[in-house]
Image (cartoon, rainbow, N blue to C red; front, side):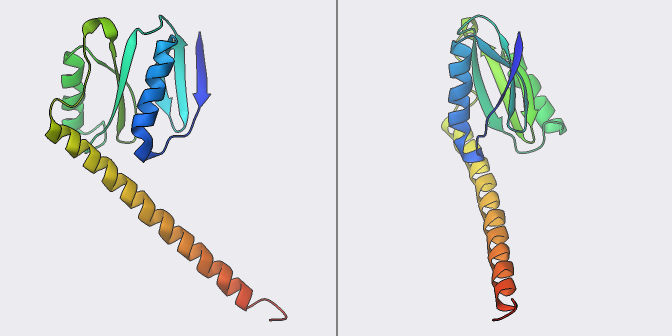
Length: 146
């Protein structure tokens, strides 16, 4: 049986999201599709899969990303889905250890990509907030009776 869960995770919480997906898998709820704040699960054997997420340098449709996804699939993992540059992989627990980052440099590179994304979102959010405050301030200055 399939079911959908709507849940919000922020870019900097990708480890929390990954942990949640693995907790769901431990209960037999296996991710089959992702969307914006939407996770589709299918009931299955508890603990059958382990999940990992990665923020790619390019969109998953980019030739380099497609080659990387194929490479990961050749290790026995499965590409479950993508959301923008986030890709979701799973691998059967019976096939051994599953880690997307084989060395410290690749792990650091991934964290830098996530940090850049987070910084960009912070700047955009701050600019929007400042613009909103300026707009509200200008409305107050021109209100009747002031």
